[in-house]
Length: 105
Ligand SMILES: [Zn+2]
Ligand SMILES: [Zn+2]
Image 1 (cartoon, rainbow, N blue to C red):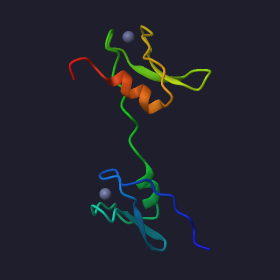
Image 2: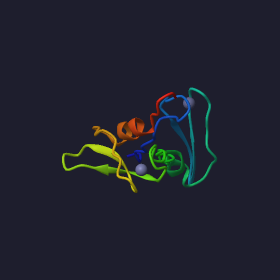
Image 3: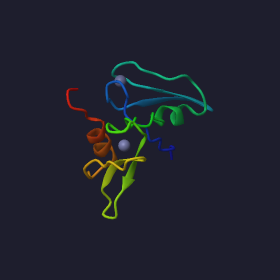
Image 4: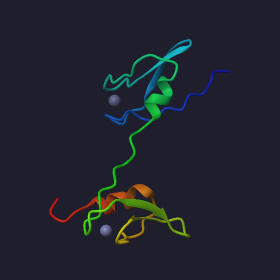
C-alpha cells in the first residue's frame, strides 16, 4: 500500500498539489500554476508549513494582541495591554480577520 501523503493546496492558486517522489527525496508541485519547492526528504513538511496569520497590533494602544478561545469554542482577539476584544467568531481565522480590519482600509 502506498503511503498517503496529505498535501495542503497550492498557496498561490489554491489548486490541489502533487508530489514527485524519488526516494528518499521528494518535491511538491502545483500542476496548475507550476509552483514547486526544492527536492528534499522534508519537502512535504515544508510545503505544508504556512506562515502564521499576522495579528495586527491593538488599534487603541498599539500593544500586541493574541487569539483566545472562549468556553464555547468561539474565538476572539484581545489586546494584551488594554484588553480591547474583537467580536467572537466561530473560527480563529475569522476572529483575526475581524480584528485586523480597520476603518478606511
Ligand atoms: Zn498553484
Ligand atoms: Zn490595547
